[in-house]
Image (cartoon, rainbow, N blue to C red; front, side, top):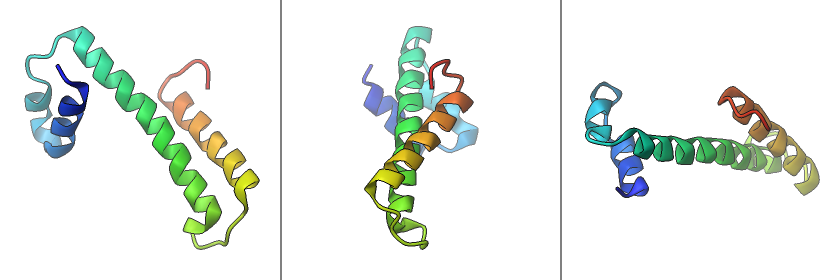
Length: 87
């Protein structure tokens, strides 16, 4: 099983047909896919927040340090929401 192929298949599948995307995977394989997706969710939230605070939200560039600090806060919030014990 290639995790990237499974994720790609999941992204291209409608939510109603999601069972098709993971059909035949064992629980440990699903756990690996889930771990990768949760890690990426937190990382992408951090990157998106950084881009916003550097001017992407239309409110001007807040500078690297503030953007980094705010982005880290967003990542911690997403990790907490996903159930991680250590943000």
